[in-house]
Image (cartoon, rainbow, N blue to C red; front, side, top):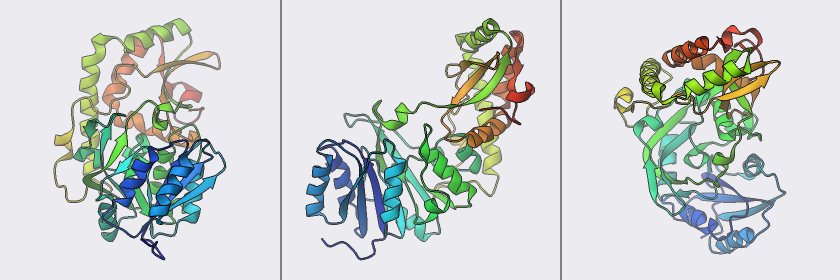
Length: 363
């Protein structure tokens, strides 16, 4: 098969030392019902036989091209290299341990034909043995700028956008946070039209060895401030006690329903194409809580005081401040419970503590 002069879709796949299993990913692209694509496999300084396996597939499918890059140690560099060489009207991403089902590109192109600038599809999640452990629901495909601000959504393997959009907002950025969350947020800020598709066209690998599981958050969302370490530790322990679990679940459900109801009434709310269901009816109680009953909260000494804080996988401090400013407005019932426990142990809410409040500090 010859490579089209101008493929409609450029597929960018960063890889490092994937070896033979990368052929499953390559084969899932070759099996697409849409055929006018190019696949740019950017090897991030691989030291095993990954490049040989890619070259072998490229000999039988010339739409696949190996690009050898110096080691970056982060997928943003290889993805930017792929963007620089992409010729397609649209750019789609595929991580080297994920798979596409044959209709993936068709679903993306249909959404672009309807006017989308950015498209994300539904998914299945499988373990390393190939067993499907969960699947996307309609609510997972609903989108709003506030959802994009508060949490990482849409893994790269589910996403495509019109060529040039990523470069216009600065491209992929390296860092210790979730680089896809960072780029999608900048695209949203730039006014890109987001669309989603219900079809589960992607199989994502869920494994402790994947990069998403290895991200160490450097940012934090201050929740409370204490003058005394022992009091801060006591509050943290109480927030994690089982006796508060039911109350936190109820507060989480109330907050999320109110938030979802407000977003759904706005013109910015995006439902998956062709779905007219009720987002609130899809909501499972306890979904999207603020770290449960304290399991994710940390005790952080800083400047002679002690913070109870939630870790954030934001790439930039500016993004962390945006989360900090928005999260209390969207989680009032949960914070009311937290503030009650904090006050009982002599602490104050972070926004009432001067330099730790929403107007400044180091998130």
